Structure formats: C-alpha cells, structure tokens
Length: 285
Length: 183
Image: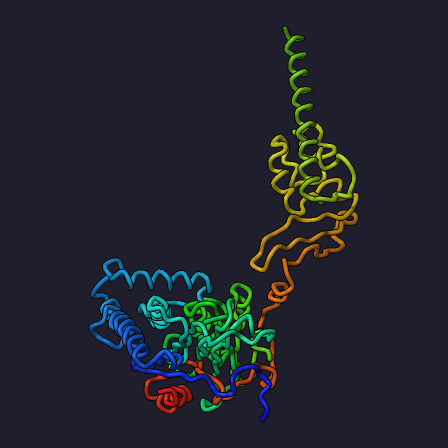
C-alpha cells in the first residue's frame, strides 16, 4: 500500500480522556506530546463546566433549575442568568429557523436540551483556549469541536507542498445511521485558517427527544409525522450553529435544509429516511 | 385688485412650474448617475418627477415615480434600484444597470433590457467578488451517491460524529474504540 500524502505514515500520536455527563460520554483528545498532566488538567476543567451546566439544565434531575421551571415553581424572570441567556438564544434560533428549532416541547414545557450541549461544548472550547491549548478535539456524544491540528508543528512544513499553507486537519468520520459500526462519510475539521471547526449531527431515530417534527409550526410537512431525514450532519464555524441547524433540518425537512444552506455558511450531509444522501459541495469527494 | 391677484397667482404658478422643471432635471441627473447607462432617451424621466399636476402629460405613464409635487426625493430613492425603467424612457426601451447590492457572497449587480415597456432580458454584470464565493451561491445540498461523498475509514479518523449516543451505547461505539486506542 503506497501512501501518496506528504504526511508522516504513522497516525498522529494522540491521548484521550473521557467522562460521562448529560447522559452521554465526552471525550477530549490532545496530541500525546503535550503530556498526560496537561490532558488531565484540561479534562478536569471541561468536566467541571459540563457538570455545572447539567446541574442547572437537566430535566432528568428533579432538583435542577430547569425541572423547577418545568413544574412552574419558579418563573423565567427569576431564573439564573445562564437560564435566561440560553432561553433568549434558543428563542432567537426559533426565529431564525422559522420555528423548526424550538426551546419548547409540544406539551409546552421549556426544554433547552437542544441547545445546552452545544453551549457546553462552546464554553469548554473557550476554556481550553484560555488554558493556552491550541490543538485539541472535543467530542460530546457525537458532536465535535476542534482547534488546530492533531499533529504538533515540528520543524518547517515541506516547501512547495500544497499543504504548506496549513496543517493536517482533524479527520472526523460520520456514522452510518443504518449501521453504526461503519462510517458513511468523513469531514476534515480545522488544520488551516478558515476551515470549519465544528461538526454536529442530529438523528430522528436515536434519542431524538429534543426534536419534534415541525408539522404545524413551520408548515414543512403538515400532517406528516415521519421525518424526511434519518440523520443530518452540519459543519460550521461554531458548534452552536452546527448543532441548532442540524436539529432544525431534521425537524423542518427539505425546506429548512434549503433555508439553512442559503442563509448560513455551512456544509450539510443529510441521510434521507430511505438511505439516500443529500450533500453540499464540501462533502463531495 | 382682482386683476392684480390673478397676475400674481399666475406668476406664482409659473414659478412653481419652473422650480418643478428644474428639480425634474436634477432628478434625471441623479438617475443618470445611479443607472450608469440609461441608454433610453432624454428628459422624459425627469419630467415625471416635476409634474405637480400641470405637466401631467409627460408624467402620465409611470405611477411609481410620478407622485406629483414631492418632486425629486422619492424619485431619487427609487432611482437607486433599476427603477428608471418606469415612465416614458421605459417605453422607449434600452438597457439599465441596477445598483450594486451587497450579499453575503459579495457584490452583485444585474442589468435589464427593456423593450416596449417589458423586461426582455436580465444579465449579471457582476456576480460576487471572487470565484470561490460564486460557487457558494449554489451551496444547496444535492443528491449524492455514497461513492461520491468524502470517504473515511474508521482506522483513519480521529473522532466520530453522529447523533447523540447514550452512555451505554458509547461503550460499543466507534468513538469508544478510538478513545481506547488513545488512552
């Protein structure tokens, strides 16, 4: 097997740490050369941040602020600043997506879980950068945010090579919703300036508890309950945009897909209910 | 007394007419600037602005710009777009360039060709600032075969994207295998 790339033949040496939060598993991956201590410290910071947000926003915890709001024990104006800010963000996204993304369940209960994980990833990323870490990959249950490259700079880039302008990107695989042991596509994140850093995926089959088919509201598919898309992946500059739009497209169907690609600088890979693919040019090989 | 007032009234209306005429000419000038090549003929469009009831003969056809005594202002506003087509000039026909509009893909400008009052052609004078952005205009998702998307092997990726998995499902996931390899 001959390699044609200019990259070193060995896969980049990486080190990962994981923890459980928000009902899923969060993985932080750093170049191994940075050392185990740095990774442990960074993971602790990220874990603390996730745990704090989960404590406030989880509807699975009866004592959380979100649960007390849902039981109408407190009103939104009395809620914490985090709660009010995220609610405002979510309502803003509902407007931007014409109702395809909404922070309220059909029964009227406020549910910010559609935006809180993306927000947690974004805040964690900001913290990692503040710690001085430039190269990392953060994966929270299938939503990914990266910075820099998996390969630390050692010496000068190969002169004249087309990649000399950038570094090796993080290579993300997207699972096949039909068979989760295989990948349906790949997408490079980070590595060079201007590259998309975030990849979020929403599905209608799996744990889609914050996605509701927007039949009545958006007019996407009135009267139809079966989602058009089995799975939608969105690559964007930031994770909240990617996460919200992936959710909105699953809920809003084809009209929302077109609105999203027209209105935002994103790349989309959508798997239709029958398994067919729709993709923007960035996902084309 | 009566004669005098009649004379002064006539003079006044003549003055108004004159002012209207001049503002009309002014309107035409700004329009000429906005729509770089109003190949369509002469002072006709200008006359529409002045009208104020009296010179209605020239202003007759338009409707959008000929809002009587308001003279130049409204006409100048609409002149920024490809509006100069209204009025007699449009009847005459010609080509008109629209203003440059900024979009998130860059600057866009179109030109229309008018013949007998109808738009017969629309051409793009300027579609965005560079080719890369022009491509983005058609960034809609299109049907694709699996063999046409960016491929990836699980041995060759550093992270896995997918719909949110539960902690239990993680244990048997590809991401868990990758994490385990990097522990």
